[in-house]
Image (cartoon, rainbow, N blue to C red; front, side, top):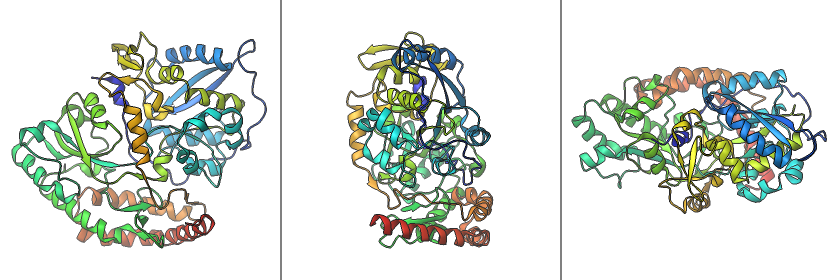
Length: 493
């Protein structure tokens, strides 16, 4: 099994922090206190905090990285990894306390980029991009930098990766083949029923529809805050913010989910399941849903060790959260902002550095089997990094079996993306923080049970709607509507 492909974690569980207690420790603009460039001067050490399970060989790899970056730009690098589930909370505390750091991973779903930029945790990068990050600007699709601006400024460097988000139905191909099932006509949630029924009747030890507690049906809405029930319709003309719990699309989807739950297609523990990794490893599942990218089936199949195939469950949309799905920011406290930007510039444009950070040491963790093709070695188990979180993926080496045109297909996929209506709008929650906290508490009580079909929506949906309103959802929606109207007026939307 390819260790590298365990990295393929597309759209991990949305962990968006709604209120972040980050204090501004230092200015937002770049200072002029960077150490000298390159040879002959004492290198500076950059502290890089990033998301992911800490790896046994991280320090060993960073020693090799530092030899390279010391020669190139006069810096050494110390990487600190914090596991996915702990990242947001620990980074909030460290940023608020003024912990020394230079570069930090941020995104729409962990250590929230927009909120932390507004709180002053990150340095404004507009000038640094011009003076020390020119190659990043040349490399990135302009939509990444434009779509990740906060109040007109850039505070992070998006990873050059898939730009749109597209949901697909994934299938364990073994059972499609065994029962001669055709996924070509599958698209809607309702269209899954004949396939699920067949597997349920014939495979009592298989979970027909695998999901965890973060599951939510696909409906045609763009959320103001991801996975909170306020959104505008994808085909909106008036940009009216609505409560999706009252929308006919979600009501119908929840009825179908409850029907599937009662039929035994969905695990009885779905509403409390935190991960389906064990199912994926064992192969004891038939269907789930995931976010895709070009050749995703190859990556999933390599990671799990058996064939996985997929078909679209929705269209490829470019959302705020997909543009901001993986970013590196420079701390407002960084002593060496110019050097930090030089490092990010090199990381995103130099294949030698990018692949070292991604795959480890050549001859130890991987070997080259072609000009830009690699094969993992046994020691790769000690350095298994989340590729998407580390910068430009389009200069990483191909794996054996990857098509030669892989990155060309990524560019085509990015070009196919449809702009979601709220792309470029970032909700300022400062006036409704109390209500958001109360709404989040209601979500914890009702959301997973409803979305996974565990409870009857006819009984529980009215209760949830009432509780959300009592918590202040209408006030939050009104504030969001006011800001959206102002944003439209200023942008000509």
